[in-house]
Length: 99
Image (tube, rainbow, N blue to C red; front, side, top):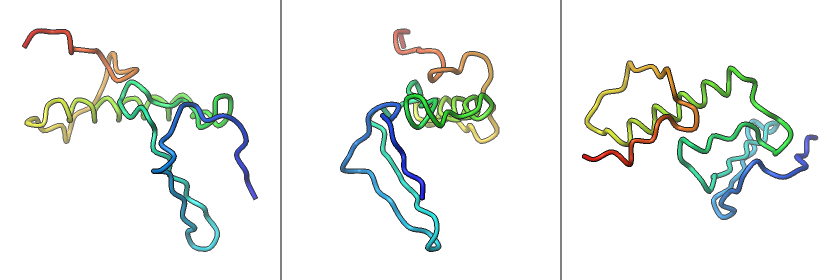
């Protein structure tokens, strides 16, 4: 049996958390983060434990940044896109630029 003890890395929405038992042996827990944008990628499950290794963390940042660009630019096809450069914390902030 495995029990998590400690403080989550950041806040979650309690009413949206679920768990399921799969194949009578694995418990899958789904937590919905309060801050769900690309700039708020959790580096670990708990504040000081279960941190993602650097490669996994990098891949999560890239994926979240690409998802952000897809939401901000719905007319563009990002199917073959790769993220490089400044993509940590969701990439550069262009919200202050004039349109």
